[in-house]
Length: 184
Image (cartoon, rainbow, N blue to C red; front, side):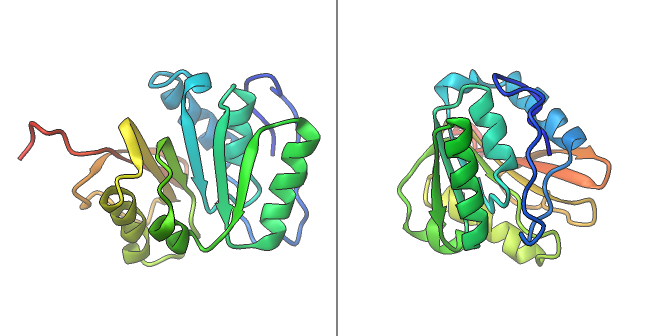
């Protein structure tokens, strides 16, 4: 995997082969960050990276100047890899080893961007539970966005907070936002 932009642009990272991960492809990540670049100033937002895996998304935000990043994963080796890589690259990424659903249930953190990249073989209900938790607990700041990455075979468009999807090959990013107070 490589960092696409920012102060570490072009930097290649090699994760251990034994991590149970499927990193977001460079093409999909570049498309995602082109969208986010039009929505936010990276140095003034906070990010929660759920199912962080290798930390691919967290490093990209950090390279672009985001200071408040929380990477959550249940796998100890993933969290250790993110922690060590962030330390080596002098990136300020807070790591938490936790089941994502337990984390969402207990946290009071709010973020501008919450990114979730759960296993693609999850049942739709498990994907929907992520969105339900984020909105029930009010974890997004004003004008914040939840992005869930999933396969093209999963449809999350029936969730009441779903805004739109962006597809990149077999990857889909579903965007969710708080309901406008003007909507019924």
